Length: 124
View 1: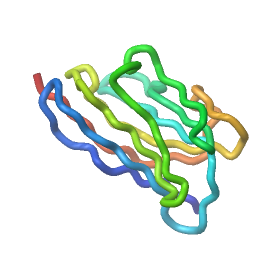
View 2: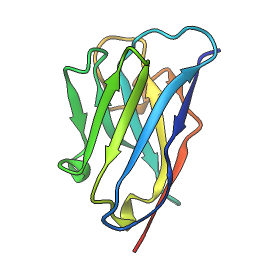
View 3: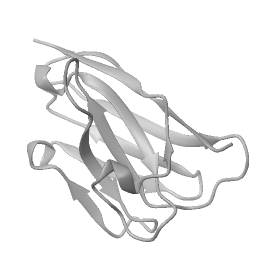
View 4: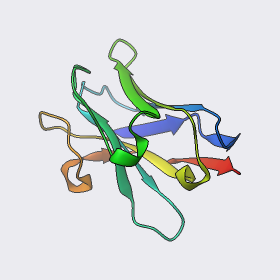
């Protein structure tokens, strides 16, 4: 069973930065397009960013453009989400996901594997 593990969450003040990481555990995992999603208390889970398998294409939801950056190191089989200029409204559980099909995607239904999530809390 493929599992993804997120790390790097925590408590940060508004304006601060965090870097989330996501790596597979368990059996050997291929290089797949990856995405980051988040779910705030009382809200639906939403798309944040996605990256193609090569890292050549990236996609962001409008409200994180210019603040968040998704990247990957395929040698380490790890995907990152660098979050700068954090705001209290960025508080959420952040999930990484992988899809077997080609190309990055923004819809949750297009992803096949999910992590358990990491909590990010931004204080004002």
